[in-house]
Image (cartoon, rainbow, N blue to C red):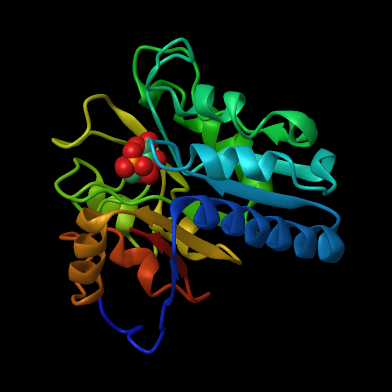
Length: 236
Ligand SMILES: O=C(O)[C@H](O)[C@@H](O)[C@H](O)[C@H](O)COP(=O)(O)O
């Protein structure tokens, strides 16, 4: 996909992971305050995985009207909360603590045989809270973001800029279990977009992603040139 080359991402390089995580928490809290001031409510989307824990913990302490904030994941592994791979469990242990415990968590998992069986329920829970006011994304070294993986079975649908789906099931060679993911149009419509990455492998992946236009090869490209320019938060 080409056509939006003029949009320039903002790259913020932090001296260490501690300042990266705490500064991002302040920036995201600012996004949410702005939304609360403008509309009385705010929607936050955050990633799971191994990187965002300290950011989520820092954000949980922000002084804001959490009772009017809806929180969702950008994507979830299709596993129950008892699994150590559950992103929902990560959110409960990090973000949904202290002041932020007053926020409303929008479910991204329901017990069922397959994600297809609970898709409509999850999508209707999310719909009233779109667009997202502040969306933080992670990225894999394979240049996936959310669960938009290169080679995933429904990637074309997930990347379809004109598509109506907000959430889709996704199965991919790089993902050990089925996933549910927000789609590219939902991510791209976020009022504020952030990408949180650490380390040389992801730096190299980001450089590759920034150098090309094919979304299917590097799905993170769908958000690198979104209408609201993404902020990329990087530390070594
Ligand atoms: O559930 C997940 O795995 C994600 O939300 C995913 O998109 C993640 O952000 C990247 O895979 C980076 O993961 P790490 O932070 O573990 O490297």
